[in-house]
Length: 246
Image (cartoon, rainbow, N blue to C red):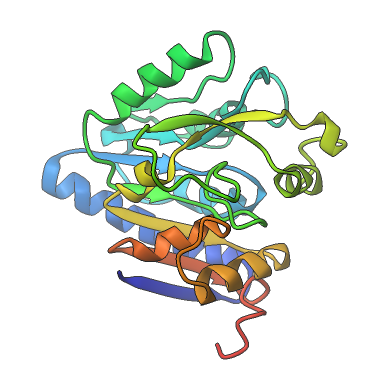
């Protein structure tokens, strides 16, 4: 277990610091093996990191991207679609070697099976893994399944997760949030060589506190990240506010 915690003054500084770490890890991978693989999170908490990352000095033509999760039966045209998010905010702004998306439409089982095969071809160098207000990682809401070896799985979203999506402005009401989602499973997330978590804003303070102070617990899925050999956590003054000793 190895945790490095960086506390920034605000989300903008957090994003720059997190992006610098991600870029350095990608460049190390490219230098040593000629290519790199990255998993990207989405959501409002990732805005500043993603903006800084696309400005970073990385040879993106040697980087292969995967993403973490997507709603089931939500069209890509919907403002909350994570495919739409990544294509508009990241993929369209750089020239990646390849981009692999979670497709929650059509034959979902076949989609995630094919994606899992692609993902497992080689190790992932950097996992950019956010933490939700309920402590989830990807859409692994509590109680998270820490045991499955499947790379992706279909899950039911809990009420607090749905409320977060409303609070971030993606949906009008919790009833509008899809019931099911596809998520990368916890063990698959943990298989990344390096994990970077960008977790700004006061709404994440409870989740950050629980993640840091509680022992491994499926009811706080992000506690699993503490078992990783290289976890880099970036928080700001607001998300760190419950960590009074810091």
